[in-house]
Image (tube, rainbow, N blue to C red):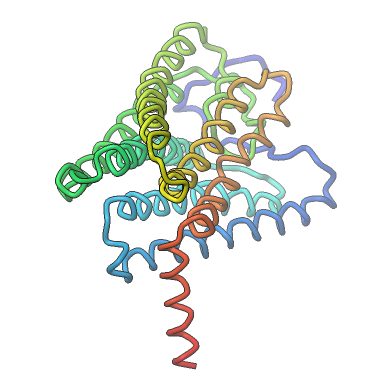
Length: 313
């Protein structure tokens, strides 16, 4: 571990995920916390997908996107949470080299896809509020499918580039990743390579991902706000804003946590882990709650399911 030699990816067989630097007796508490949050993610997102699939009233573009959002949240939290929970009880806390590559690839795939999907959802709300008469024509099934497929395609391309760049670095003898999952920043700290080109490329790639999605979201909401302010009735304004508030809440939580993590200096790794926890587990847990509590259609569909269940019992 103290050796300053280097090794390439062919020499390294595994990494060690240090996780949270807390006293051993707190590992049980952290395990229970992770277990509770992950259980809520499973219940919330599987429940949301089930409601959207089974209720014909929710067969609209908005809920098509929301179903895909729940699917993404479910899977990228599943990439992180089970391994983190296992490591609370593991002495070695190791993850294989292939496992680390897979974890980084899948997480990058789903998190980038979610960013593009949120931009597509903002565009959907823009059309619904600013051009309601043309909504069913413009937001066709074909376009919605293309937007979702395009989101996954962008996520896949980005993930391939990010993962390949990260694991072609030369690593020092240390295998200890100061994080609870395999992420680019803690992995690059193990590298003995010159990181200037890597960091510039990563920064450029991040800009290509973040700027278009943020621009689409901001411009869409500028038009939405402008249109809503022209509505004379208070009830009409309230209804228009209520359809956007859930989406805006999800966007704020995700982008706020991501920005906080990547703006946190390397000298505060524990703070970075807390920020990572927000968007890897807390955000996927909150998204179904935000949409179910703020959305009248989802609440009515859930009420209908519960009434059916009570009737059967």
